[in-house]
Image (cartoon, rainbow, N blue to C red):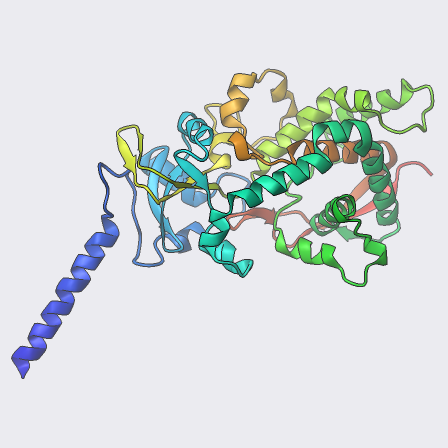
Length: 391
């Protein structure tokens, strides 16, 4: 009887040892990128989720980049993942959309939506439809010809409402503003007439939407913003007329402030793709079916590209070439499936800054401490009071 138990135990040990070896050394038709698969099943997920009180790239990424280089392997949420901070390789990958890689969402994201991840990832036409819908409603031509005055009116109304409050939480309030406006344009949703607060549900779903305050009174860049926007008003025949597309395009320093805010924020920890074929890079092989995570923060906070990368310095954009930004600045993704709402987002920020700087001021009430978990956000929120600038 004892010999039987010893045989069973020995067999279990052999099976467990083989399984553990296969976990740590996945099959590959070549040489895998360096890295570690972590513990069985959970991989390195717990380390990936460790929060940090910094706008710097996630510690998990930074530590492994230093240890393994710009491309390394890991395992997150039970999936094998290759993480890349190599700008040349990332640029190449985004040009191979639908050929070597496809859009992909982690299974956990699919569970939030109560959907099968395989089905979500397979429906390429859904993304194409949504992209065309967004471009049709918020694309450059629509923004230029129709949307700008509507957007300015909506921001004016919302800021007027905020000025009557003793305090407000920035992320929640701005998320609500964005949702209410876009929902009204897409399907005529009227927040004030609806019995269901869809905007609040949207706010709770998204994290870190307003991740970096861009115009704090008393700073050098705020003074430059103020001068630029007051000059726009002074040059008008009618000071009370609405913002024009030509005026928006003339906001050189404001665009620099927006670019710098986007560079520093890097809200999402990574942009995910799934490999459709084995991919060769730097002597390594990324197997077919693996997840590929491109890390915007690793590119946009790289000291080799951006001097003193954690400093908020809008003036740096006066000297940055298009060749540099093409591969090292991807706040809206890259390639054929980059964010269709990129232009709208930048216009919204520009108009918001214009109205805020010319008509209002804010005072910090509490909060504003930045943290990553691994998305970027405010730990206890960022509460401010908005008051009219004149009167």
